[in-house]
Structures are given as C-alpha cells and as structure tokens.
Image (cartoon, rainbow, N blue to C red; front, side, top):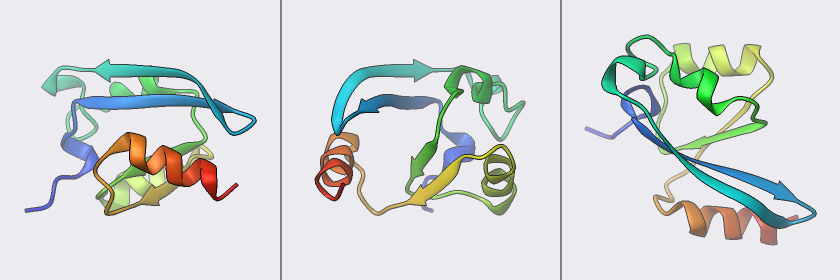
Length: 90
C-alpha cells in the first residue's frame, strides 16, 4: 500500500523566494490531527501555495484545490531532491 497525505503526521514546509529556500520547518501532528482524522493539520500548514506528496485521495485534493493550493504528486520521496529539481526548472 502506497503512503498518502491523509495519514501523514510529519510535513516539511519550505518557503522559497527568488529561487532560494528562505525557511524550512518540520511540522509534526498527532494522529488525531491528521487529514484523515480531523484535518486540523491544515491550519498548521497554511498559508501555502503548493502541496507536494507521493499520494493523495480525491477528497483531500479537492479540498486543497478549493482553497487555492496547487497539488503536485511525485514519485520523489526526498523533499530536498524535489525542492532542488523544482528550483532548477524555474
């Protein structure tokens, strides 16, 4: 079974400006705050423009889309690698 964002309890939040990482923060929540339980984790992640994951259900994808968050699904499991590739394509 492929892991997905709904059950995730640890998130890396990056802030980028002019192609550079200006801030990086690990956000951890309890199981009861995960997207699949109460969804309280969203409050800790906002504001955000892009949500990157290896898997996500349709309901969460729609919820994020409705608040203006672009969802990117990737096979990359290393956040640093993904951020570097994202920056290099800009």
